[in-house]
Structure formats: structure tokens, C-alpha cells
Image (tube, rainbow, N blue to C red; front, top):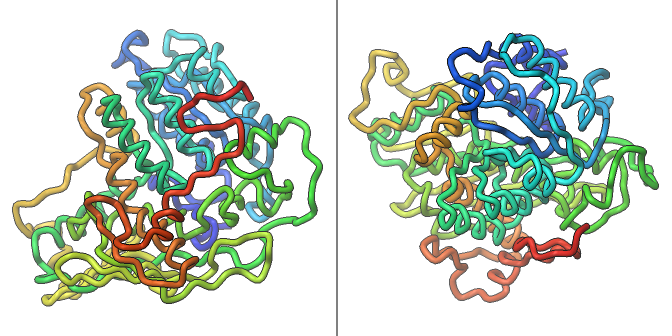
Length: 458
């Protein structure tokens, strides 16, 4: 059956894929190009960390690019199956991923053997032993920063899924590390590479709406009830659960809070709010020219937690933000899912696969709104690989990704403190609020993990 965006975020898959269960996984095997145009010695080597549903989608995207070759895979889980909510079938983890990549390369006469794809359970060994040119981080959110920082220290370029980091302080650290290492970094906010969203940004930035005054960012609601079995498990063969938890608190293992549904708990993620804010709010920031700054204030007007104690991220939420120039924005599960931007001369609404406007002429191919143009890229992964070669900045760099999710980080702080926050985007400090800054910047890792990498072997 077709699957919807609500709760599952399924359509985070690359846009060309069918959203039907299992179909997306197989399509890329036939799409691996015969490596004739790029000699094997010139291919960018790729290691993928995190082999769940998103990791598989990215594997398929990288398999479809002849300029690279996947040489290494890593996950702390050997094999797990799609939750019953998803329907039966497809397996994830080290074993299925290795088979998937090997079969894909065996299907093309590339002159290089399909064997030799190295598989690891420790991402540090993938980085140091396989030593790929680039590392793809498709882990749960609580691992993004540690995996990325380890990769950057080793001189690797990084493609990291969104949200770029679980914690605000991690985001600042990654932005600084990318700059100091002169690394190429792409965040998986792939809507930036979708022509529909780029069209909307071009229209708004060229002034067709007049003076923009209102932005409505609509995100799906969070989990209200357990999304799986809540029975506490002692463990499972093939899974290193302690390593899976890593720098996060080691909560009791249960199906409802593990694969697919982990983001419902703040130990591992920021709920559906932080899952989706890096998509629609990212485009909102781009459209209003705030992608390297941010709001001037934020206030939480709704924050309803689920009835279950399995999760502690909001089911419904509304974050009201003010931006320079008098622009008011709401990031809310109550808004229509997508992005609506309103100005003195009209409005425009966009979501995946759909764009609407108060003036239909704006949407015609022949309409040219002005001279401003956002970059045009073939695909999000292709843009990353091209930038690895040219050393240019990607379309979704670390700083822009960090700033697009900052209102969500601030929302959690404002909800906890119960007050409006004044935000200095230049210094990334809450004005005159020591308690808010302390909450915003907290980063308590479970031993032995640190962001600096100076830890005992785990």
C-alpha cells in the first residue's frame, strides 16, 4: 500500500523513488551505471555508517553515481526487519547492506570485482581501516556529531543526514570543524536540490510577493502513542545495543523506541519536530534570506506531550518566531504540512510534489521573476560528489543546516523554561538569559564518548 508522510517521514526518500513498500530498494540495482566514463582509480570511495531505511536510500543514490564507489559499510546491527507497521519484507543492517551493494556492482561489467566491500560494526574502524574518501552518516540523530567529527579529524568529507546534529552545541562544533578542516560537507536536506522548492525560493527572493510578512512552516505531528511493542527486551542477537546508545543515555531496549521510532525520545532525537524542521524550515530560511542568521525571538505557544512515557517529544507544537524586517513565522504541527509564505502582493505554498500561488502566472515556466537564481544541481548526492572534486561549498552546508534547525533547539529550551527567548543570531546566544543558554548548550555524553574523540576504546 502507498505510504503517507505523516509520522513516518517516508517521503524523505529521494524524490524519484516510488513511496511503495520495498519498491524503492530494488530500483537502484538496475540504475547502477556501467563504469566506463570514470576510471576506477578516479572514483571517489564511499563508506556508509548507519544501514537502516535511510542508509539504504542513500546507498541507492550513491550506487547511481558513476563517479563514486561504495567500499565500506558499518552498523552496530547485523540484521533487522522492517517494523510490522511498514509491512513485511526488506531487511536492514550489515548483512543485507553488503548483499545489496555486492549484487548491484555484480550487475554491471565495471572491470572491478563485486567482492571486497568491507563491513564493520565500529565506525572508527571503517574510517581508519577502509579509509574512504567520504563518509556518509545515516545513523540515528544522537550519533551524527560523533561520527561526523571522527570523520573530519581523519580528513574525510562528509554527507550527513538531517537534522545535522541532535544537540545545538554539537552543531556549532561541526560548523567550526568543517571550516577549520576545509572539508566538504553536505546535509541531507535534499529539498534544496528539488526544482519545485528552488522555484519558490527564486520567486520569493526576486520580490514577487512584495514585502514578506508571514511564514507558515507546517510539519507533521509527533508520536502520540507507542509506535511498536513496549515490552522491555534484554537484547537481541546481532545487535550491540550499548554501542547503539553510544553517547546517549542507555534506556531500556524496546521495539517502540528502537529502529524507526527512536526519535520519539529526547535521548536519541528531537521528535518529528526535529525530523522535519531541517526540510521545510530550511527552505523558509532560504526564501527569506535568513539561512546564515536566524530569528530575533522565539516563543512556544503550544507544546503537548504524548500520553505515554515511552516518548517525551511533543505530539503537537507551535513555535512562533520573529525575523528581521517584521517577518512573523510559525513552525507548527497545526499548519498545513509544507511551507506557505505571504507578502503584500500575494502568497505561495509548496510541499513535496505540489506548488500553489495566489497568482498562477508566477508558476508558469515562461515566467521570469528577476535576476536572482539559486544554484541548479542534478541531485543532492551528485552535488556533494561534484563539490568533493571541486572543493566548492555544497548546496546544504553545515552552517546553513545548523541555523535552519536552531529554532527547534530554541523551542525545546523555551518549552522547558516557559518563556519567550530573545535570540542574537550573530553571537548565537539567548539575550539576558543564563538559564536558557545553559540548557541550549548542554551536552552530557555517556562515558566513554566525547566529541573530541579522546576516549577509551568502547
